[in-house]
Length: 426
Ligand code: DSN
Image (cartoon, rainbow, N blue to C red; front, side, top):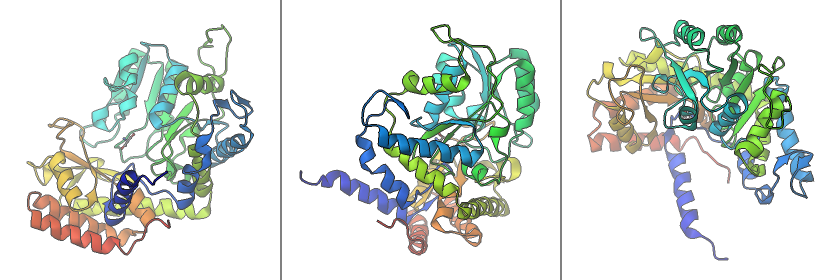
């Protein structure tokens, strides 16, 4: 076959884009060459519906080994007693939890999307909000932190069957103990979606939700630095709260219900090449050097947040405990939308994303905020001394977002610096 130059030229362009710019999207990272190699391997050729040792296809004895290795490494990383490594994404992992724990129309409680929550925690345009009865809690206007009083009040009044902690744009540690207490009080399942801070948690720098929640979900590609995908974990104390029965009338443990909810409930054949890449990433996360990496992610974020504050920007909640921060542009540039700011920064080869801030006066398409994160630049080797330099470049662009010469000058400085931080061995 002739080489598909059309698509490989597009891939080359994306590789160049990733290499020349500063990547500040909080949910992105650069995987290792071994993760890339496993993802691009012959394992993609194999159908393996089912689970190791119980497959619906022959010839699964080799992929069984890599899926088992992924499971064992993931358990070790978080101290979990049961895991499922097959979800294709974080949203798929969450969907499986909904399917295992709730019936259509049941109430559940999650963080408001416009206050930092995730689409699959109850947005009206997502399966979670379409098929189930979504209730929400907010962050407090005065300090941008989760309003646990409100969460408890909604939980006690509405009796949701599932309470979700976790966010896409929240820079603070969670009070998992408090949520677990109210979940126990009302007989709800407590699920944590740790997708964003999963890497910091694996490194022991933030509290491990596996110790507090009944069920934990995650993606594998954000701070964790693995391939794009999802996982589900459980710790030791999982009860079978409602003695929920299967269609056959059999009482099953939650682990079996979750396995069934992933396959055959919501997915078919697992992506065994991605599962092997997950195993590689979990193995990397078990190395001592991974803790150094995550400490640097956290330090870079703290220094970046300070640099924004020094320049007159408002950070929601005033700072960060993790890898990300949400900047409210209105204090410094009241007329600048997140949409315009994102576009101007991208033109300067600084990639970030517009984001609503809590109590935003603008829509999700315009927004008053930008979200920044440090996982990718830290993988690239940037240390805390470079954070004020980055913030200064951002400030120069945002001060004149329509000035093409200004943007070009910033872009040249970005490109000249990033050449010093090589990416990709092949
Ligand atoms: N869309 C992801 C993020 O950027 O945070 C969450 O799934």
